[in-house]
Length: 341
Ligand SMILES: *Cc1c(COP(=O)(O)O)cnc(C)c1O
Ligand code: SF4
Image: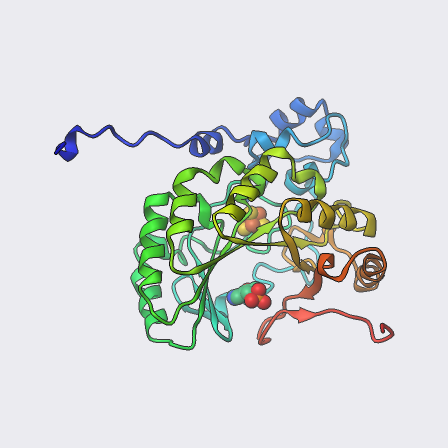
């Protein structure tokens, strides 16, 4: 037998290295794309508490020289984020009042959401958790025991949702231990991962990750987050196909974003491309009114027009459900018009 001390040290996985090398300076991003900071309304990173973060592989999918690129707009800090717009607040979805233990949100029947880390591999400018006090509500800071105790004491909970931040930013050792502890809770049937990593850092879907997904007793659902077909390149398609082969059910949620995907043709392309990647569209969220994101707002009437046109173009299974999140409601709130059939 080889003594443990003689085993090679774990090497850093490729995805960690890619994450370390992600871009953090708007000036560097704009230079790569051949764009002028002034012309695109970028502002220096010192101006915001939510600094830029974007993996190089994601930048490679942007169109050089295009200030309106739908991927660029999702990640570039802009001066208009600093405007104080009435109605746009720090905690728009009432997360903090749904906390039953640090980082544990129990809003809806049968499913509990665990904010497993505050970190992400990308900083989306429209993110509704951009002001979430992760430092105080972070169960991986030693409080997973509280979350597990809560779940054990609530037999009506069948599904645990790992969210964040992005749960796949955690190491497989940490994640594997958590998933095993979850699988030991007999009434849990499903484990859902809300993650943007397969899209923004497809390297993350490596064999270590696939091994614990394949090995779990729990049904695994991956809800990825793509907003535009251009995000789904060949590397992403391959990562998704490996997740699918490992037995994960794949769904997508998007946010309806002005300038990014606010047309039926953009959403049609997205649904078609998702399906090619074995993913079904799930939710299309109206933007949560989070401070700093007002410039992404699409009004309800426009959103409904887009949905009507999308339904006329696509089979039903490729049409996402348009929803909004309202504090205190028992589910996401479907958004529809009264004139519709
Ligand atoms: C969105 C959300 C869920 C999941 O809702 P589904 O409709 O099942 O996708 C669960 N818990 C919280 C706190 C949420 O915000
Ligand atoms: S990956 Fe998700 S949680 Fe992270 S910044 Fe983007 S939208 Fe927010």
